[in-house]
Length: 388
Image (cartoon, rainbow, N blue to C red; front, side, top):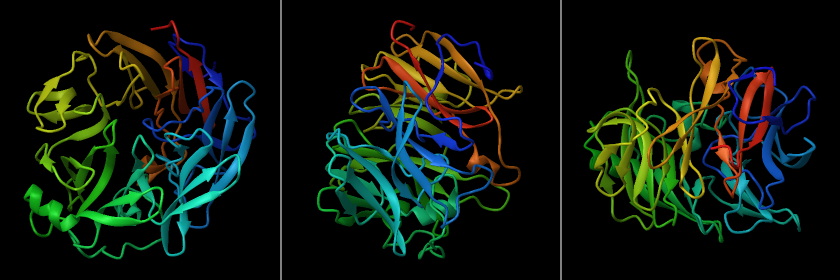
């Protein structure tokens, strides 16, 4: 396929060639249906600017064999990194979850594809537990002010002038009743991490551990003049107890839970900089055997935890690598490289970019990724069973 090089798999397009852009979004959300034949995705008419409040993304199903797209819903709460956090309900194969713009804020929807019934969740979830019963919510307006590629536009942050507000922070969401409550505030988090009084903070990433009893989060400080943001790693129980400060201010990027206790992440901690294994209760860390990975990747374990996918950023020739490796030994290499195209210039170009965000199907026999190697953004997939 043109724009793909050094491929160890046969890459197939999973979306129409109609001039529109198709993408799924983040790498750690479930995109494949239970049959492995259909894939959730977003459809947009543009990619050369940030989404505005009146812009809409069509949410639908891509037929992996025919490339046909079936529209299911629309939303005006989306971005180009994570979309509308569209995903399959963790325990109900007939339901999908996604975020919407609701009144003067953002909310979540759980939609049954068989009946068409929609259940409204009063606060937009940033992540959902594996049993589908709990969600964790954050202020997506505050996140938009920090990183437009991850937040939603058009709603002013009511706490924009507060460094660490007492009324905002991490919210616990009951996904069955739709109700939510503040679990821990930014003011409390700033105190627990020992931050200065005027340091403005935001939750950028937050993810449940596999069983949903505990979660981790990246607390970041807004950049000051001439400086970059700071990142702190924390974890706590889903009921609000068991807080643990897992790092001081450092470089922490992408991650994935290996098990209920251990995180794989690209970071700079006490054991060095690179791909690390981090204890989610103590912060103790060791180097992962795959130390040939020398730059940041989106890292994701296979369903059986035997393999890891990792996609990186463009090289000097504009190609994004997709790596594979054995989880235990670190042995691996390049699975493919895809030519990357930017649709936007200037300060906000990074927030409209298309990362590969490679992801597994439910059985670990196929992968998919988003890419711009054929000009517009497209959804692609490949069978991987027997290749690694």
